[in-house]
Structures are given as structure tokens and as C-alpha cells.
Image (cartoon, rainbow, N blue to C red; front, side, top):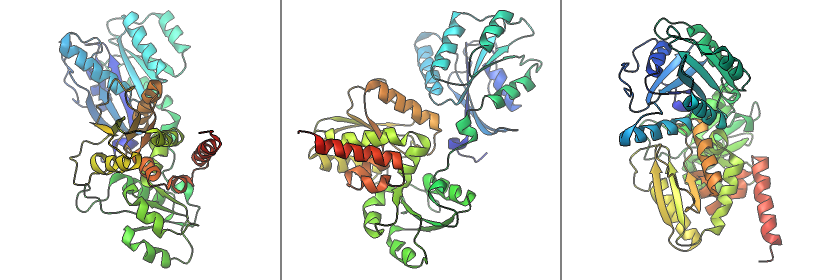
Length: 416
């Protein structure tokens, strides 16, 4: 139950009001997770339930308000529901067995357009059955399964679990490593972990913990130290480390202390690869050179922690970028799931590492930025670029490094 949301399969439950979404959730979790009532609109906000499912592992069920909710409050609930789609790995579309209409067809197409694996649950099958020709048509759809189900008597529960297992996205089963692929077997990695004021006493911040576990799972050697102890750590090794990984806030110091023949990168750069698209975020960082005083920059923080003194998102990055462009930029901030509907007015979006989110949440934001024509990068890449150590931070990643080299070459060849 302590597994972070990052590593949980996010299963969103969607459908009209009063089709039995909450009853379905209670069946799956085998407990009274959500309030069930015959009154339409009982679920008003997304309800999250972390579970451990046999043969699947840690999951996060997200029960949503009916997407046909009405009134001014109803439209707000529908907006919240549509936000859930952006972080869903696998969708359950709940339908009254005999009531597939244009509404369900439209919602199904919306899920399909997001390339979401979808299991259609025809609930209340004790009252009616879905049309055979509908089942046949849906069976032709890719990434789609149909289950005839009844929350009241448990019909179809085993078939539903089987459908869930069969439609788990490949990237969830074959999750990429954070850093282990950068450290050959038998070699050592040095992790430079400054004590962050935002981390509670006695703990490391989550990206550092996750990286340590990733390396331990792959049987790699690890040395963990603060930046002030890095020279001593390097001197104690008989063989140079395969890589040094640092908190991005210590990039400048660690770059100066790490010999040039030892690869160096940051935790945030690793999470750009793990949680999003490192190549796209690399291109986003290149747009920093095009920023001018007065341009709008959005800084998006996944966590909702209270900013501390010298906070990276609200203080350090704005100060660094203002210095880089030689004037004052206009910064706006969002936290948690809040994200502007209108993005086109921004010249750059800078996202945190999103260590507490699943990958689909980040990819959804990357897609929205791309559709708006706005470059997007993350904290670590932004800092490395501003400090002019971008090339070194990208060295362990050949494609991203090539993107940067091509950028430099195009600048040299530019008549300007």
C-alpha cells in the first residue's frame, strides 16, 4: 500500500451517471470504497483507491463523476473527469448493458483518440443484454475488450480481471530503468544528494530514493554523498565510477568537481526520460535562447508542497532565467493537476520531474504543449542549459546529445 503512484497502473472508470461505476469499483476492490446510491450524480469528484491486484500488482483505481453531469457544478465535475483521462493508463467504460447510444459512442471515440486501452463493461446485465452486433463491432477495435457484467450478482468478474490483465500497456509491464542501464554490471554509480530543505528530516527526496532502488534491483554498486564529499568519494575508488548523478540544484558545483572523463547527469534529466520524452524536452530547453524579457513562462509543479526558502520552482529557476535573458520574464505557476486550458500565450513550459505521477500524465501535458506549439522542458534540463553544461548532462543519452549537436551546428551555419 506504500507503493508510490508513479509505479501504479492508473485505471480510470468512466461513463454516464448512475450506470454503476461506483458499484463496479466496490466489486473490484471487494470493499465499500465508493458511496453507492440510486440518485444520479452521487460521485462528485474523482475517488482514488490504491490496490494490489493478483497477477497485476499495484494499481490505482480512479472513480469519476458521470460525464453527462448537469448544471454549473456538473460542468466542473465533467472537467475534473476529463483531467482523469489524461492520467489514465487503462480505461473502464461502464455502460448499461442495453443502452449504448451516441453518448457512449462519442466517449469511446474520445478514449480511443487518446490511444487508451479500453475495457467496455456492460453492467446491469441482469436487466438487459447488449446487442450482439454491437459486441461484434467492438471486437474489431484495437486495444478494446467487452465484458458482460453485473455488479449486483458478480457475473463477469473473472472475465473482467482477465480483460484487465490482457490490456495492461506494455510500458507498464516492461518498465524502463531509471539509471541501471547506464551502469555496466560490476561498476559503481555515485549519487550526489544535497539535503533538500523540502524533504522531511530523516528522508531523501523521492527521485533519489527511486534511483537508489532501481540501481539496487539491478545489482549495481552505489555511493551516496553530498556535494562537499564528492572529491573524497572519488579518491577512495580504485576504479572511476560509471556515472555521477546529481540533484540538479548542485549541477554547477558537481560539474566542477567531477573529472571530464566521468559521465555526469542529473536526477531530473533521468526523470525526463523515465516519465516523459527526453528528446522532446531537450528540444524544449533549446528554446531558452529565444526567450526575451517580457515573455511568459509557465512553471508546472506536480507536487502541492508549500514552497520553502530558495525553492527551485518559484525562486531559483526564475532568477536563473532572468539572469540568462538579461531582463524580467513573466512567470506563472501551476501546482498539482491544475494546468491552463490556453497555452499558446506562453513561450516556454518548464515542468518538474513529476516523480509522484505516472508517465501518461506527463505525456498528456507534452501532447497539449505540442498541439499549442509551445516548447516544454523540465527543471533539470532548464538548469543544465542555463548553466551552459547541457552537453555534459546529455552525454549518457546519444539521441538527445545528437539533437543538441545538430542545434549547435545549425546555429553556426545560420547567416545571422
